[in-house]
Image (cartoon, rainbow, N blue to C red; front, side, top):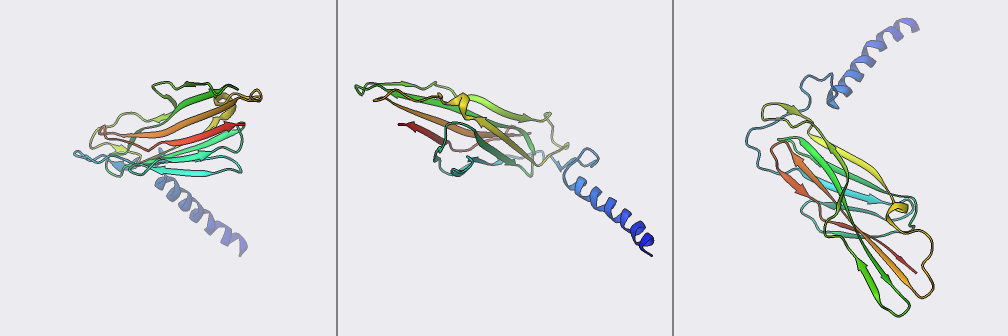
Length: 193
């Protein structure tokens, strides 16, 4: 009797697997996700999360306000997670941008600031451009670790001096109709001493 029970479970397990794969929008799902609508004028929804092990977790959403985050360490990684969704046009591109502002003050209190005008595209995920009537993934997730040792000068600052690094990070999403949205900035701060 146990052999008969095992044989009956196999089809159910395969059915469950196919159901999960079809809901995930895998290549075997002929629908491929959502159908792109012809007149979508709404931008995607978008969130950006930033976290450091044993430190703060900060989240910003498109249409919300910016947040500050103080680092507990200048080594290791800063985990970044951007999530975009558009139920009418799908997601064509998801990007995470980073800009760095450095302020160094000497023992006399004289400070030098360096802040590039433009940030840099740090991470991106794109799909082939689709047209109305075609199918697309409804959402996109971009999870990346930002190596802090490459962003922040390592070692110690000389006695009597100070260093402040501000990383301004934001996410940007573009749907298949060209609608764009951007999160407010997360300002990640490291200062010493």
